Length: 438
Image (tube, rainbow, N blue to C red; front, side):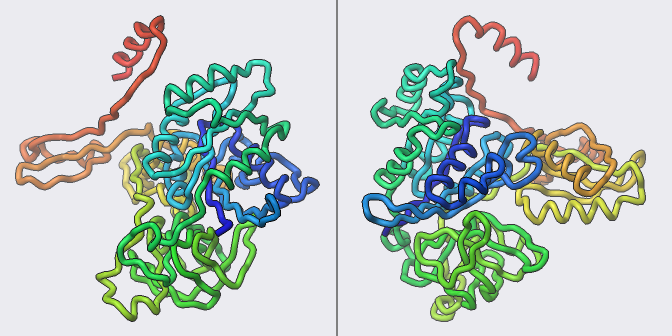
């Protein structure tokens, strides 16, 4: 099968989106004259302003190589630690990953984290060193780092300049030669396999005109427009109102086959009903077997927020506007949570959960910019778990929720297992920094 599903993983600002732009140019997915600004897959205004990727973006490219036509499904991913959940979604839909490293900076924290995650998912890794045209580039040093960190041999590494377009075709050739084509779930040795349609939901967005649009990776069988499908986790049966590919905008099609990445317009009114990581089955299959016996596809695991902050409006009359705005942002951000909160000093507001400080900053800026709200945001904090004397546990997010000490057996706090790698001359200062930040 001439399909390759892959993503680009790297530390922030190592050139992922620029490399994706060169792929779009070479494969003529987007004409060069239409490349009006860089980072074509970064559609959000904040992404373009900050020069970072926030939301994952899939795109289908078609390329002729050695007389054969190939379908290349690329999923562009964020590099910042706060958006690791977006990376984990991408990996669940791919067979391979391009590991991109900046020739001037070498291996960074997210390079390690993303690569280990890809290896855990049994993805084929294609190592690429970017920005080799810069004066500060030190390719031999980066080659040594890749070998020491991941056991990657220097001859496996491709040196490129995404900005100048140097050696980009070699990367596409490596994608075709090294990354295996997608297998059906029966070929992958997963139980409960047959040739009927099953797909993994790796993202979902809300369209005000068409409802929830589920982004899927087809794992077996095929689906046609108008087919009845069933969401296994939420037990929702719907009709596929429209199906298609990402080019990178929606491109309707009549059929999605095994191994392909595409979208399904569901008509659902709540994005929570198209849960990320859910399995979509064709309804006809479930008529033949017991629904309780149907097994979900392995892949994406849901992530929980780590940082919490309260958001209040300066003007009390804006409460309903804030509530509606949070609901709309929640539609397209599965990792963002919120619940109503009452403060004696600040009035009505919401206790919100985020993946990190950048995630909080992005949400706050979008609320202020897109909805014209004047906000008060409390200092971010983490949640604790209170273990009661009778054995049951409860999550505590604010001091006011803390129960009487006589009812508490223990209090658990989040811990981070941290590994710091540093040259010898910095160890003393590093130890002091860690102790001061405890």
